[in-house]
Image (cartoon, one colour):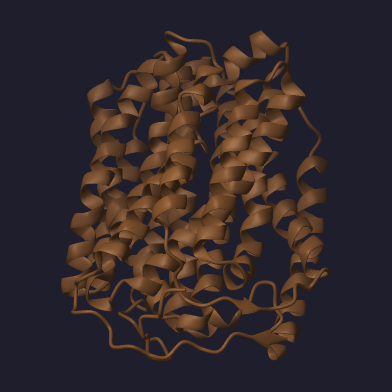
Length: 492
């Protein structure tokens, strides 16, 4: 293994100040990340339309979302290595190039296989962008103002998926489903062109050899877990055998264990595909665990709420999208505010009250019935958005700030991977609880709406218990404990 010479340490910029060049790099990455992450949920309300237009059933159509999430889980673990080997500009152009190619393919799709392939290509581009954004911000931004900037990242990561169904519903109300992609494509191409022109390289690359054995182990490990967890919905509805869950989860657990053991061996010679040394930081470890719980509750509730609104209260997909829109906007507004509060007071002062607020919101949603007014659901969802906004930014900032600079890219990849697994676990958990409780209610003689409302209540209350666990984890999450000083690296 050979390396470029390490850059000389230079004095960090004035606290809270970024150069115009650094602000440009981060702004371009934020805009691009928002565009690509938006597509993670943009297909959810389009499935019924696609079922009719492409002559497919619901379980087949759901793969358009599942394949995207599965691609993220498979590709993200590799990005820690890619960030070490490639420059910022190269990775940005790779990410946006793949995403744009996938979006173009989706717009031109004449059948289901072509559309599914397009979603996989989009997912590859999205998987590269998320860790690249996190790593760049942690590298460039001084610790004194890192919370505010990470607040902007939390806006992108949490608000973009929340807006996806709303935007999709608005488009489908007046246009063909292909316009979901045709309207996104020029924005993606413009972001790629702007980034290619303005992007500067952050830090130094290292010529690390890739371990070819680790790649399939990572793909089978993380992919198996996410695939099995995403299959819970089909199994719970009776559309698939339980083997659809246990076989991939079992294969995923075994191969993931082998992958992690191999990384522990390879990192001794600095050849790991996903270096696990960020876990030497107590703050990083607890932040990652708490982040998994937060995303479990976040995506679990994101699945539950549309099911409740449409299947129990009988509202349209468009109205459903409009009802969750205020919560997404509120998270966007609060992200930078929470970041500033983090810079002033640290993570604990935000995590504990925000966890309580999020838990209260989920408990309120756990009281809904078939006759609950829409204003109550809207208010509880906005309260949940407040709690999530106050949790995500401190977790990202404290966790990644506690990792020595040379391992930041791996820390970002770990965070993003755990989010995908946690989100898949949250979806599986709430779908299972919903199906079991609904079936029990119908067996007891309740109507479909009443039984479904009972299942929704149980699922929301279990999600509240998960969110409450964040309070315990918050005790162990403090401000930056990085073992190495963080000099702002020279630009390549």
